[in-house]
Length: 597
Picture 1: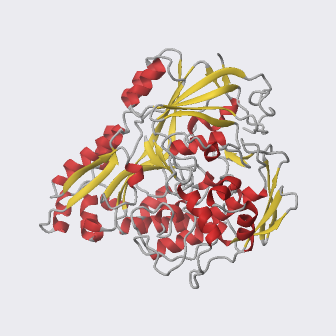
Picture 2: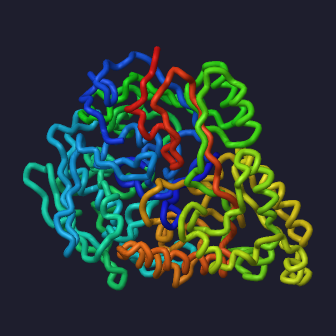
Picture 3: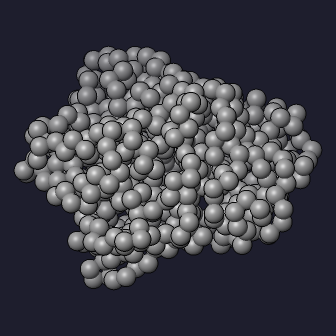
């Protein structure tokens, strides 16, 4: 598969800043081990052996939460190489990792959260992990210094400044202030001006601040002091550019992106159990144990290799031939049948917290609302579900919400209210009437290496042609890098969720969202995106989300297609793997695996 990341509630990661962000994707409590001498949670010696896992997408960045690096494979490498205050279990519970530190709710009114790091934590280069890193992480995720206003095209309209290109939502954390930093640099307190429903998902730890400062040409102390003392951004009164922040942000935004392993090891430091040791682009990446890791989530094996295999059948063949130990292939009936025929293979299935969808840009041919509606009337969603999903999940249905999945209690209410019934069936005659003799050309982009996306494109192209549309084939392998550009009019891709948090609307659908790629702007949705993070009542959040869902259908934003079916398989040499439907996949508990040589 190949997609991005969504959430549990409004659709709703590991540790750190990216825990609530949706990502482009391919489709228990910590144990008692310490350092690298013990294995996992059972205290057994580490087995000197490698585990090999297949991934669909190539690695592109050591910064998985930037606008350019928010890809599922990057997030998985981040999960393996970053320690933090929490992680998400396979039951979508936020689990504390007290071997890293603690997050304590000090006060509810005002909302105050104290972060305390354990003593002796280090980055893989030996530099201390301390509150300087947390202060920098807070600056990134809060967007606190931005004072720019932008139009629907993303252009700054008021002469203000936008610093960190964070892929997630800054709503909620952008009302906070760091009020106290301990002299020993092991604890700090964050205070919020308003309630914030997802305060417990803000881990703050991100990139090593000493690296960012060096690459930006500033001193760590100056950067941290600038963050702690500079005023909050005010779009009504934009301030002159803060050169220290700009230098740090300019590097953070793209400086960790890469196409091969840099000679400069500081660009891929680790705070977690593994560290990147080698990378053969387009082929594989190898991670080995991080000798400076002090936490409890130590694996019972010494090496993990990620092989980049985009083709589903090639993944199955690699598993059959013993070339890989774990695969998470594109789910299909043929794939399941092939896996079931293999000996010594364990298969896990379940629903993924991801969905495939068609999005329209709000520019070019689709500036016209009638053209948007006409095109959506031609989308053969039932045919796509019958062809792609039912062979693997006979219960699969067309997805009729942009913001809920069927397992959520509010899904039925959303479908009854949101207007999705207007697209329940293909309506070629209705589309022709709206076009009134026009024959628009639509450039449709999708991942040409993903069989589901190819099949969906072909079905849409054929159906839309009956109404007079010419749908040009915009399939390409670098589709994710092209999101937000003007080379396409519509795009098929997917979002995959961490399973926790309430950040989907402000991240994706608000005009100010870090992952709003199609220039969508709706004042009501923007307001909902600001209101949900400060709303603590779940029933109210559901009501607001349904309202936003209704706006999306009314505006012809696009159409959800289906919730993805999940499929993963592994060899018998590994035990302890369980099904995980979020973007982390089977590696969510890698420290609990037991591996034979």
